[in-house]
Figure 1 (cartoon, rainbow, N blue to C red):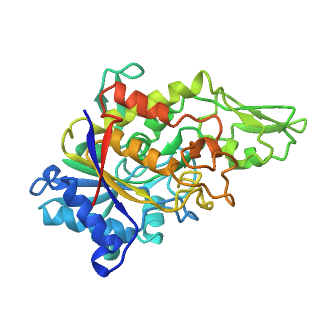
Figure 2: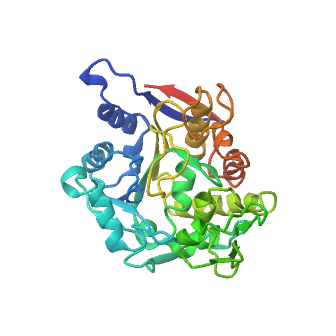
Figure 3: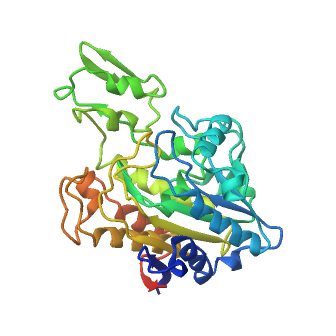
Length: 368
């Protein structure tokens, strides 16, 4: 059995084919109106971008979904959750401020911003899922309380999960810090022979888990929260994780959280993936690197697995940019995300999500 995934390219030859009109048409074609009830509170799950990042979805596109939800009689609000690491989004005050600085204010989007896990990440709800790694998961309270949800995801790379799309947006994005910590089972370690003691890792660690002793960094595994900031910051690639034992579990734990975020909203969720400015790393970084492939288009579906599978395939069908972080796998058909982060297995999240019944990897790509 396959799931329909609707696709709009970015080609346009008149004002009738503008990108904003395509967002509206995708909403209609994918049947998102059926998820919206009269006066139903509809969470529009978005990533507002870390301060300094500019790869996030344009608030102008988000406005089109807001207006569509209102036309269906729903009550839309824009939402995300507080981060595990210390940055510009680790509490609701700074998080909302960052969202406004990036254009997500009421004047532009037509909807309020509500940080779903509250001022300091303590507004939570326990959701029973009875899966392999978790009996219960902890979901942000206002996302759990919403009647329906439209998940808008900027599809891009990720240093550990390979890519971030609808599944990751559900998993990490709908979890408070407590839930994010539960997913991050992996703990990085230093490779002494590569380490130069530059302290780049120590300077970015949000929990002071890294020290430099005898010109080598040392990571305290008890203090470490597994946010992987040190891995990205290290100029010598001297920090690694156990890819064989820890990362498959990380992927499965992440998927189970995504599963939990959907509970209680069966047939009341829609997903949009934006394959625009496909950066090598996620929007949690306070900068945006150059894209690894050309812009492709926008997808919509009610199946989070199918839309991520289609997005993954569309990216890999592109010729990669040589003047980017993509070091290998430039040719069409190659796994572009492995070309950036060689040991990742993005398809792992798709396989497990299908296994636990979140959706199917089989899809019909329907061009509008």
